[in-house]
Length: 393
Ligand code: PMP
Image 1: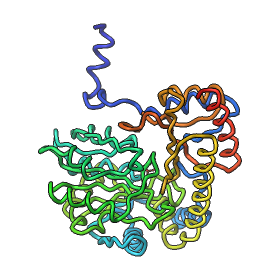
Image 2: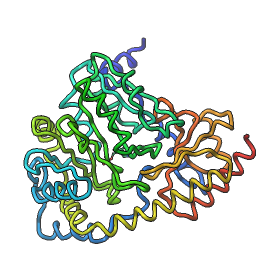
Image 3: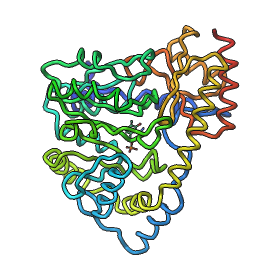
């Protein structure tokens, strides 16, 4: 071992050394050096935040609302979040004791893990899934345990799969429906058996419902609505996706008061509070943003319908994603693994997609295509992918 490599490993924590950088970045870096690239890679809306929301944030600045807010967030915003969750998803929470406004859903996931997981305790993660879950569990000292959902089941979790992953060390199950990257949604009837297993083993549930509004065929069914689940569920959501506010970094977490007060301790020492300017924008989004959300959802639904049909026309098998803004078609007939496929597609046809393997177990053999981009771009991307498939199958 050289002196410099000794120093490098010595000065970093073991936990950070053990996590890998996100596999998504590599493709963006490659794509950014090329010309004429159509990107279906990014996981964010192609809409700019609606004007009334931007205006409300500007007005808060003009009024001089530039100080720290209450640690848990502006009380009026928490009240509005409570009203919104109750009206939209029938999940009432107490704005005083059960809701914390966070720096994106990302911070909400982090403080949830740190407030609930002891070293060595296992958190079951449903994959293919959001790339941040496993690293955040590990950084909190927990052990992520993956379940690879299956295409034949529409990437939904089955109670048998969940039972098989549970050990005496299991503390919590992390759920995310509608799912990133598969777009899978689970109905109330499909969630009920999952809730029974959770009850039987006395587990916590962390339900990331950031895509709740983007559910195209059924009303979203929120996990804490299920019988006996509210008291063991931590509900995570935010403004990034449905309200087209990714850059504002604003989310929220709702949990029974013993858990939320523990999370608040971490949040107040590490963040103090979320951005005041973002909070005033979010207040407007909840008070007067319904029409805009519906307009964006209608547009995503049209694009979802287009891309699923287009994939089948070019011979790519793709289950119908019920929510979020991703399609997760199979590339198996090319015989390539997903990394190779994404790399070759980018080089040969200048279309950027994300290889399925970065989303964990069950992801290889697929690519994630975000359809939150213009219809023109989608059309051209499909033509290019059709050509690529003809050449390689
Ligand atoms: N959860 C899921 C499933 C996501 O896809 C994302 C963003 N890609 C997040 C959480 C993080 O969202 P935020 O911008 O609110 O931190």
